[in-house]
Image 1 (cartoon, rainbow, N blue to C red):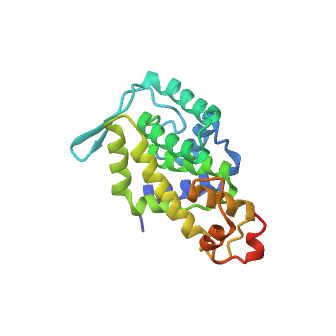
Image 2 (cartoon, rainbow, N blue to C red):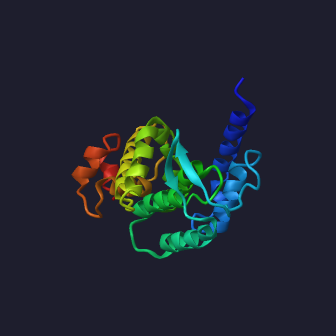
Image 3 (cartoon, rainbow, N blue to C red):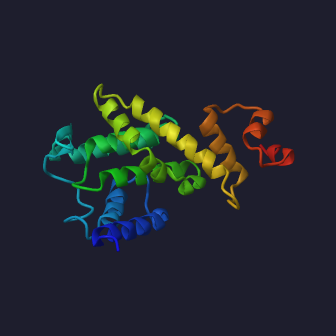
Length: 223
């Protein structure tokens, strides 16, 4: 049997992912509610933003000093304002949000899991098919590269390295998702996914068919 804490973590994660439709990706209060579900029984006051200072340790080394507790709320409000109002592609905004969320480190614990959950929440606004994107699994498989990308972005105070890493993870996850047997992907979702991969609003039917070998020419013509 696994330790009780590990079992509770899994149960909470299953519950919070099953409730994704009840949360608003663009709302801070909703994010706190999700954290409350995710960390119930694992921390004191789940869902509450931290008010104290915190440092993130990697072994015996201090890897990151998060902003002071009194800055957490205003920084998160600025981050959600960016998410709502900025004209960047939502795919890019999801990565920026993920990085900045980890930098702010708004909760005493569970920040990594929440950052990954909320990026999925944001991507789901781009296309419902992203709800099934196994980003969490891929990050676990590449966790060293994930934390390295975070650290490399921290040094210059620029999220570019982390954005590039996450876009690569999303690309791999999308490729795997489209190969999943019996997955019912709508044409509009498939097109949005392809746009996310090729990074352009313009592509030929030949390009589309070359990438989506499992669909017919007639289906491709629906674009």
